Image 1 (tube, rainbow, N blue to C red):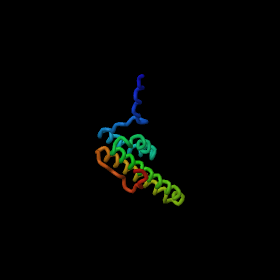
Image 2 (cartoon, rainbow, N blue to C red; image 1 turned 120 degrees about the horizontal axis):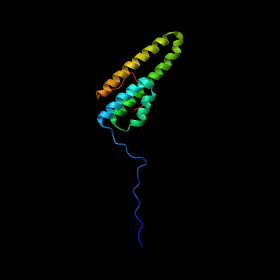
Image 3 (cartoon, rainbow, N blue to C red; image 1 turned 45 degrees about the horizontal axis):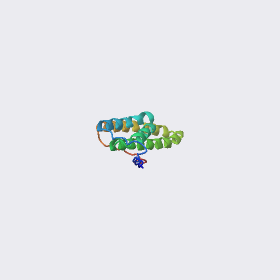
Length: 126
């Protein structure tokens, strides 16, 4: 009587994704900040969810960009009711210019391979 073959070892439910090389991490870290300019918090959210396990540099920059965009969203939502009193329009313009400058600065830092956390951002995602 022959024995049945031993069972195969269990496979992980999904294949492990290899980490990115440093050049790709720099590229995606730059793109996550630029996507915040075009797509607000949706671009950084998608990149964070897709690439967060591919490397520590891209994870840190995508989390920082997402946190910053959520903070800017909250600031804009506070400015909208104030627009009825006139000051909100000026504050909304100031928030928009601030967000644009910080995201460009963050994209330049990411492209240079430097770690960067935008100022005044609330930490929602780590």
